[in-house]
Image (cartoon, rainbow, N blue to C red):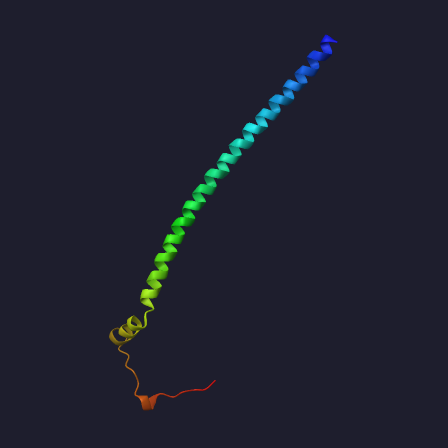
Length: 90
């Protein structure tokens, strides 16, 4: 009877050690994933800031007055005379 108790307690101890090791490994993996998520969130925040800056720049560059000034100065385009404009109906 004493020998059965020893084998049984050894088996329980082994299962307990395996279970504890699994919990520790699971917690370690969880921390690694959490660290990766935090890095990705910081990168996302940076991309959102960059996106906002690009939207602002696009708004500035696409402003009608800026387009017209660029067409006049750099491309030397001029508005055609009203008589020369042809309207096409769809």
